[in-house]
Length: 373
Image (tube, rainbow, N blue to C red; front, side, top):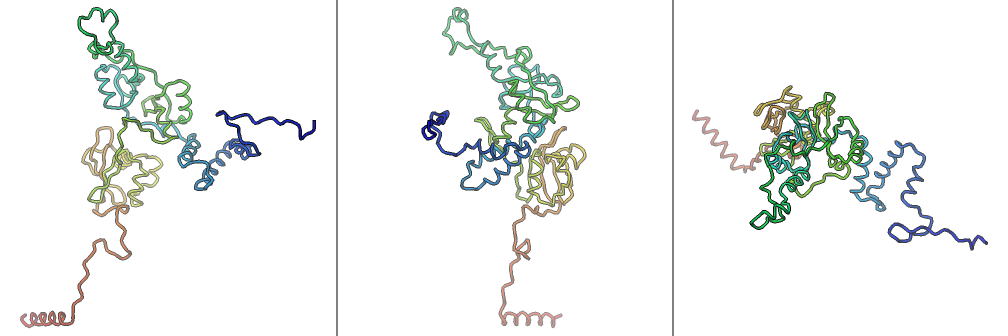
């Protein structure tokens, strides 16, 4: 058969049933394979990151800004460790294993989480976790009236045949059998490995333990996913207030959990942090490092660069809120309003030019005072 009469295989339809366009155009995946095929993974990763940077702002860029941000986050996920994404120990909401069901309901309401870690005596003795779905299921099973219960009742049955007066609210969490397993991971574990482990085990909460077996923090699958897609807020999440708020006097009131990078950006180079930024993550850690102990409420902690930190709220374990101001009362460099070069901080009223007659009157008066003397 002549070549011009030979049949060519048809392009298979796409998954949505539409025929793929004919021609010599390759798919994006094929182009990526052609461009990066045979290269080491590190080189491929760098090439992809470079391609994302080059495509930014180009009219033919196939990615939106959000897609590009997510792709960069995926590429950077392997550099994150569990201690980069975990909730620190001081911020963990947890319940003791012998807590009553009534108290457990209140804890869920106050914490606003669907899962709560469970411990025995202290957080260093974790026992597992409790899920609000299990709690609701247990309460419903106790409140549900059976056919025999309904037959014995003389009054009309309650809505849904549920009588919550039957729920034993004094029962302890352990006796109710609501404690589930959790994962135990070291802080140095790669975040992507924990994500894979959570998918495989279907356990979405991990206790981060240090080398001595103590509880260092807590990581959930939401914490890991947020590293890729950004903050995930549901209907119950309240809009968080800024961690550093300026005051009328030129200083700041800051949450002790404020990132040290954000503090440095606001206060400028005058706040001499130096190499501490490599070892300290938060403002509270900076103040603790400078004081050498957990400062008490009302304590003043001086800092190089002319700043002074006043402890507004603290407990025996951690600092909560701090007021930042300069010891000389001047505004931090980041707060000073820009003035024209040579201008003074306080604007002085210029003298009104006086006429020659006014100057003569002044000279005459001065002469009269001299004669009187």
